[in-house]
Image 1 (tube, one colour):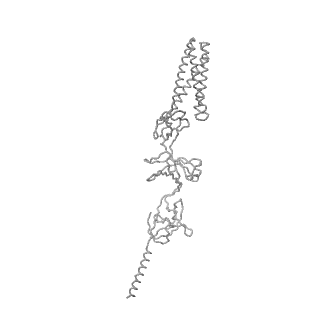
Image 2 (image 1 turned 30 degrees about the vertical axis):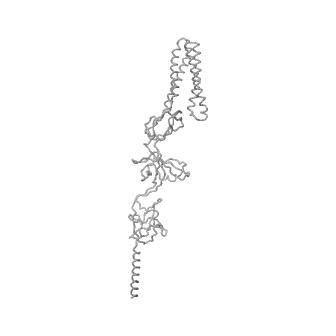
Image 3 (image 1 turned 30 degrees about the horizontal axis):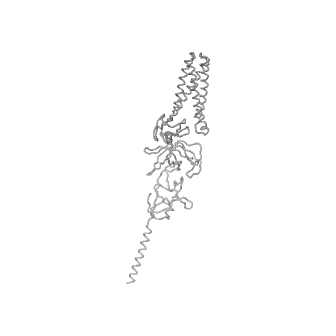
Length: 417
């Protein structure tokens, strides 16, 4: 009886071994594959790009003075000629009034030149001398007060020259007034020389008045072209000058992207060629097209992302920004250049390629088994390679044979990724 049980148990063990062996032999290894289809492949490289305004200008005042008013806010869209800021012109306005009065005085003097001299005329000439001396004293005081500021470079050259010229003109005017009094005492009949001097003085005053009007007008800062206001720096009441940035004016109707490319990557880059622009977003990056406008004819020293100095060539790109994408000057973009393209190619990852007896090969799936296939590669990029012989559309290729550690002939259960 015991012998009978031993025979039964032995037979069961043999059956179990046979079943296990058959199951193992029929077991399929799950593996991901790619199903090759003709498609386009290209060489490409990516550089950082910066969005630039079509025109960008830092607005500065023409003259020094106190900022009286700011007429715009950041983000405002303005037309050409729109008032942006105003500088205080009180001192200039007072000087203009004085010159207007001087012209009136000259006109009256011209009328009186043909009248007999009188005590009132002499008193008037003496009063004119006193007024001229007082104006000279004021001009001299301003000239001496600005001298140390000019030596330290705290005022503009234009303002210094104005103060110096005003002082010189005031001294000249005093001398002229004194000569006028002498001429009045000597005779009341105007000579040709007197009339010429009178005309010259009038022309001088009119020129000074025209200059003042020009300066007053330039104390109002206007937009040189239509654009968007940004980066307003000073505040009302600040003292500003020709070296003081007031604001930035962007012209946004012609945005451009600037990228800096290494000289070794210029091969294949051409004007009008299409590039891919990528704007990073929190949920999903946005990709859109652009085309090359200009390639600089020279290289400049620039810093790489690692902080190393490199020769770089500036490439300017016209972006085709999709509606609804909010970007503006200063935004960073990725710029992908495609320098060589092949169409209708059978493409596999470079990791799929290996060598057997000195020949290139792929591991493909045939009838549920992993089979080594000799192939002929051609065009290569950093990640992919085209196969011109040994592969057909629809073939299933294992993308990384070394990672799967499959032997040739192994039964597999492929999953197309």
